[in-house]
Image (tube, rainbow, N blue to C red; front, side, top):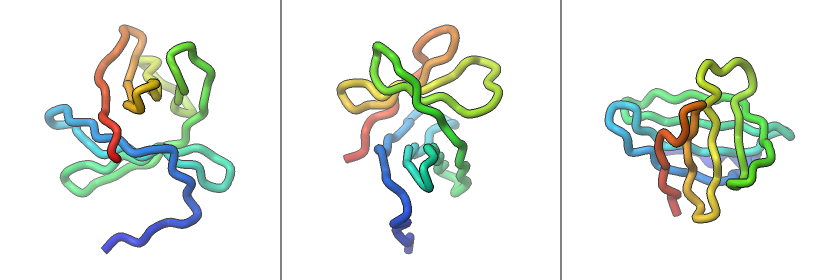
Length: 97
């Protein structure tokens, strides 16, 4: 039984279906800040703070703090969430309706 957090304003949810690292991703606003929550198949989860940047590809979300690989997420026009690093596109997480 999950309780709905009414203090969250959800931007969207996506499913990353990669083997071993697959998870459900939710981006949301809370208390004027932007966060990403990852929920994994083993029941573990994590939340990190994001900052939204401008990008010609769509809405761009970057982790706040140090990132070794310059990884970031792009919310594309089709509603899917793309993970990029300094080498290019890593994977696309499909939007959950």
